[in-house]
Image (cartoon, rainbow, N blue to C red; front, side):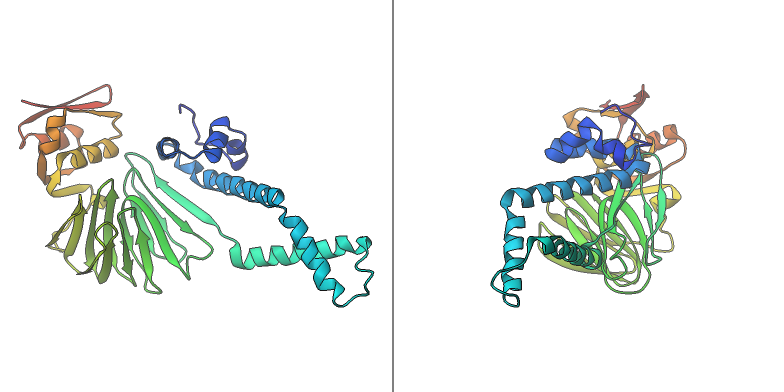
Length: 324
């Protein structure tokens, strides 16, 4: 997709052929394509979600119409009414009144029980974003990350869907749950960091206590201040860190301890908005311990690749890494 969705409204999405095709057939490839497009147009994220909700509602109405549910509803209304009216039944002239009452009741039930207000917040490439949640907690999103939550029910059910990396400062209250594809983190009020991309998930606790559950291992871990736990390819690693000396990506520092080099390269791509990565499969065996500071790109490249004796260069927005 080469379109600019920055200024798209709900109506624009509903009139967009690519969007309509995606709503009708949301394949995995299409989902990935739209996710990448919205990373470059985070302003359109909310309109995109609203348009999807409208399409879902239209599909639901279509199902009801095809299934004959309307006829069954009217039969139930007639059956309930004939128990208190003459055998002649309800006059058709009263049906609009009954329909109006039924519609009003349906609206009330929807408004107070089923109504939602889904929100999607996206941090584009090369940028971090701080977001204030409805309960006055704060989230800082790393570049190329996104969260989803329901604005209306959030104060009662504090549930966040995370893709990428985020730093959480949670106000005390009911359970605060962060869900990712690989696991979930549950807290009451604390400060912690969650990284979840592809098959890697890491959780670091700075203040308070957090409970971590990894779906693929069906294991639970409890972290207190200065503890971290992570999983990579179904292998769990836990360690401690010095909170006083801790500097996070929010300050422009990216630390790694025996991390896959590809993970580090992908972070460089997000932080410096590089177009592509060019490398051979031989680099998949490399792991990196160290850090880079988001300042000058050349300095960051030397910090990562010089200790590994690898050559790295950037041309036309493509980061190429080769063995010497």
